[in-house]
Amino acid sequence: SQKIEQNSEALNIQEGKTATLTCNYTNYSPAYLQWYRQDPGRGPVFLLLIRENEKEKRKERLKVTFDTTLKQSLFHITASQPADSATYLCALSVLYNTDKLIFGTGTRLQVFP
Amino acid sequence: AAGVIQSPRHLIKEKRETATLKCYPIPRHDTVYWYQQGPGQDPQFLISFYEKMQSDKGSIPDRFSAQQFSDYHSELNMSSLELGDSALYFCASSYRELNEQFFGPGTRLTVL
Image 1 (tube, chains in turn blue, green):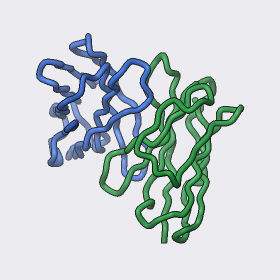
Image 2 (image 1 turned 120 degrees about the vertical axis):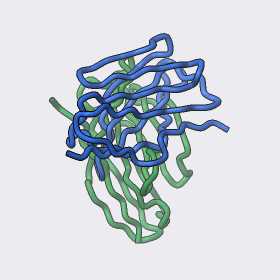
Image 3 (image 1 turned 30 degrees about the vertical axis):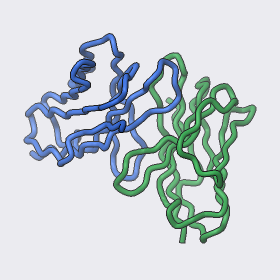
Image 4 (image 1 turned 180 degrees about the vertical axis):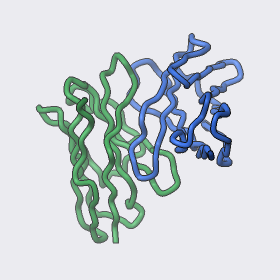
């Protein structure tokens, strides 16, 4: 069956450290992968998109890697801050210009001072 | 910058009633998506429209229908509501060439 799995447990880290979130998928061949942040009761907010032919993407304190051989994406937040505390969702698009996003289970990140 | 607008933000209905959710996409975005998110779950794709035509369909019950109008706003119509329809309903829009989707604040539907 097709699955997208993220860290099942909440991730608790200290302010200033790097948070690393994992997204593993099976039985998909994604054209690209996206990461979203979601706060309780609010809509997901787009963070980064990485295409199948890209290995790494950066944006300010955020970095995402994409390994299509391992079927895995890693999402890093460097110099984490309490304001980074939220649920982070990875999402796949299987075909270019397809419509739907297939979301992973989400990882709840808590950054404590 | 303009964001996706959804209305109403909260809606309470009885079982078997009908609900209509509205979405106003970001100006010049050509694609609208609807997602359903149950408590503690990830968003599930329902349906999408590209340039006012239905472009993809997910796990949307037959009791639900949607359309996109000439001004690009979209409506999700839900009939014969069931308790299990209680969820957050998100609308998202995108400019198809860029792929990233911008989500609205959601409509929280509670069915009693």
